[in-house]
Amino acid sequence: MVSSVLAFLGVLAASTSAAAPPPPPNNAAAACRSLKSSFPQQVVSSADAAYPAWNGRWADTAELAPSCIFRPKTAKDVSAAVKVLNKEAGPAGDACPFSIKCGGHTPWAGANNVNNGVAIDLSGYMNTTTVSADKTIVSLGGGEVWRSAYAKTDGMGIAFPGGRCPGTGVGGVSLGGGYSWFQGSVGFVADNVINFEVVLASGEIVNANKTNHQDLFMALKGGNNNFGVVTRVDLATFQHSQQIHGGLIIVPVEASDAVLENLQRFTDDDAAGGVHTNAGLTVEYFLNATSGVGQILLWVIDTDAAGEHEAIRPFLEMQPQIVNRVATSSIAQYPSSVPAVTRVMMADLTFVNDLETLKGVHKITMQIFEESKGIPGLVWDFQFEPLSRHVIDQSVARGGNSLGINGTADDLLIMFIMPLWSDPAYDDQVYAAAQKWHSSVQAYTASMGKGHRFEFANYAAKFQNVMASYGPENLQFLRTVSRKYDPKQIFQRSVRGGYKLGV
Ligand SMILES: Cc1cc2nc3c(=O)[nH]c(=O)nc-3n(C[C@H](O)[C@H](O)[C@H](O)COP(=O)(O)OP(=O)(O)OC[C@H]3O[C@@H](n4cnc5c(N)ncnc54)[C@H](O)[C@@H]3O)c2cc1C
Image (cartoon, rainbow, N blue to C red):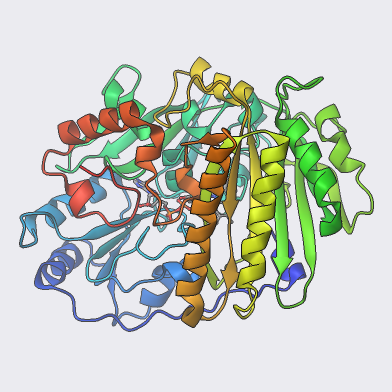
C-alpha cells in the first residue's frame, strides 16, 4: 500500500484537470438527453458546474471526458440507464459506449471512464452499508468504498474482508478477487460474497448466488466488469473484536536482503510455524529517483490483535527502523489512507515463492529502475504480497472463484510495480519501462521454472491479458457465461475498461 506516507516521502497530491471534452458522437448525445430527462438531478454534462468534481478520479491518469456522467440511486435506475444505452445503439448495433465506476482507483485511462460516452458513477448514491439483523451478512452498495463500510460497521463486533486501502471500491475490489488483511483466515474478498445483485446487458436485475444463476455467481468472483453492473454485494461476516495489531514499519533499503529472506519465509507454508491464519504482510519498496532516498515499507498485521504474532516478529524486530507506527487499533483506524496522486500506473505478475527467484526478480526490478531514473520526479514503487497455498485453500473451502488458481501446488508471491511521475510527456517512457519489467520478469521466472500464469486484475496494467491468465478452462467458462447472459456482447463491445474476455 502507498498510504499517507506518500506525503511524508515527498509525493504531491493530484491536481484535477480534465481536458475539455471533444464533441460527442450522436448516440452519446441522445443517450445523455434521454437520461437527463428521466433523471434531471442525476446527470451532468461538461457545461455543468458539478462535472469536474463528478469526473474526478484517484489518479489524474484515469481522467477522461465523458459526454455525461450518470449517478444512479437504485438498481432500477441502473436498469433504466442500460436500456437507454442499448436503445442508442452505435453503428455496429452495439450499445452507446459507457463505463462503470465505483471507487475509481484503477489508474489507467478508460478503466472506469469513457471519452464520448456515458460514465456511470455508482459512488454518488449507491454507497450504502447495511448489516442483517443477525449480523451475519453485510450488504454493500455497488458504489460503496471500504472506508465507509468499515466506519459504518465500527462497534458492531463483526468483520469482513475488504480492501486494505480504504479508499478503494467494493465493486472493483470484489469483482477482481480482492486481497484483504483477512486473506489468511477467509481467502479472497470474492470468496466471501454470498450474493451479487446485478443489472445484466438487457437491463434485467438478477441475484446471483449459490442457488440462483450459479454460473454467473462463479464468474463474477474474479470476472471483473464483464457480466453486468453490480448494484449490491452481500458479504458473509464473522464475529470479531474489531481490534487488530499492526501498522507500518519503514526500514532503509540497505536492509533489502534481510527483508526478502523474511518475506520468503513468511510466505512458505512449510517453514516452521508457516501457516498464518491471523497474520498479514505487504512489503513495499519506495525509491525516489530525484532525492535518491530508498526505503522499504513493511505493512504488518495481526488480525486478532494478539500483539506480536510470531510470523510478523522478524519484521517488528528489524533494525534500524526509520518509522514505526505499529499499534493496536480498530479495523477502521488501520493507518493506510491514500491521498490522490497525479500520474501512476500498475502492472503485476505472480511467481513461485523461491528465495533465489525472488532475489533475481528484485535485481531485474532494480535494473529497470536504474534505466528509468531520467524520468523527472519518478518514484519507483513495487510491492510483494504473499499468496500461500493456505490462502488458496480458504478459497476452495468457500466454494472457489474464477481466478484459476485453485489447487495451486506452490506458495506464490503476487508482485506489482506502481511507478509514480508527474509529467504526461513521460507517459510512454514509463509504460515502456513497465512492459519491459513485465516481460523480463516473466522470462526470468519461467527460466527458473518458477513462473506462474496468474495475473491479478486488481493490480494489472492495461496491456495485460488478465482473463487469459486465469487459464484456458476458466477463460472458456467465462466466455460461455458471457454469451449466455450477454448475447449481444454489450459488456465486451460497449463497456469501456476492465479486462476483456477476447471473444
Ligand atoms: C492505493 C491502492 C490500494 C489498493 N489496495 C488494494 C487492496 O488492498 N486489495 C485489493 O484487492 N486491491 C487493491 N487495490 C487495487 C484495487 O482493487 C483496484 O484498483 C480496484 O479495481 C479498485 O476498485 P475501485 O472500485 O476503487 O475501482 P474502479 O476503478 O472504480 O473500478 C475498477 C474496475 O471494476 C469495474 N467496476 C467497479 N465497480 C463495478 C460494479 N459495481 N459493477 C461492475 N463493474 C464494476 C470498473 O468498471 C473497473 O473496470 C489498490 C489500488 C490502489 C490504487
